[in-house]
Image (tube, rainbow, N blue to C red; front, side, top):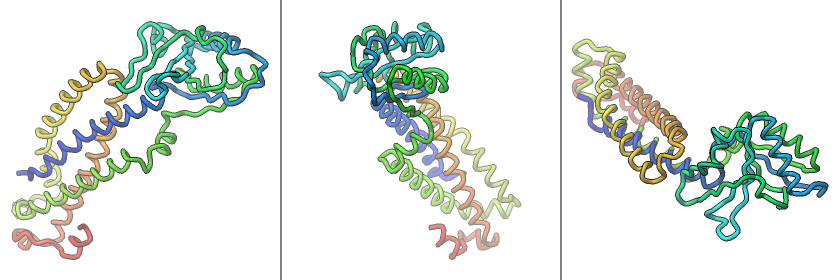
Length: 299
C-alpha cells in the first residue's frame, strides 16, 4: 500500500494551487484591468490637440483596427478601491467591447470598475494609461497614432511572462510557492523512506525500480482524482459566491499550471528517494536499511 503521507501531499498541493491562483489573480485584478494585450503609458503632450480630439482619434482607431482601447482613470473619492474605464471598441458584442453593455466582471470584490463610453472622457488631460484589448501589434500602431497627435508614449505588456516574473519574484506569493514546494518534497521523501521495508519485499518478488514507480503512480490515481474533484467543486462553489465565477477560465489556467509544477516536483522527489532505496541490496533493504552517505546528502 502507498503511504498515506504521499496521498496527503498530493491533496495538499492541489488545494494550495487553488489558493495561490486566487491570491495571484485577485492581486492582478486590483493592480490593473484583466484581459489586456498591452498597456500604453502616455507621458508627454505638446498640447497641440485637446482631450476630446484624442478621444475621437481613439474611437476611429478602434473601429479601423477592430480592437478595444480603454483609458483608465482612478476615482477621485476612492482611488484605492475604484477606477473608471472609458472604452472605445470596434466590436461591442464580444470581448472587452461587451463591457459597455454588461459591465466589467471584476475578479476581486475589493476593487470596483465603472465602464463608460470614451465620448464621456471630455476634455480630460490625454496623459495617462490606455489598455489595448486585441492584437498586440495594435498597440504599436496606437503609439504611432499618438505621435501624430503630439503625444509621447511607451508600450508594456503587464500580463506577459517576463513582466509578471519581474514583478512577483521575491514577493510573498513567490516565497509561499517555494515554502510549500519544500514541505511537499520533504514529506514525500519521508513517506517513501517510511515504506523502505515494503519496497524491499516487492524487490524480493522481482519488481524493478520502474515497476515500483509505475505501481505507486497507479495507486495514486484514485485518491488524486478524488482530491482533484473535491478541490474543483469547493473552488467553484467559493468563486460562485465570491465573484459569480468571473474570469474562471484564466483562474483555471493559473491553478492548473501551479498544480502541474507542484505535482512534477513531488513526483521527481518520489522517484529520487525510491531510487535511493535501491542503493542497498535486497536483504539489507528488507531490514529497512539505507545508504548512509546518500541518505545524509538527501536530507
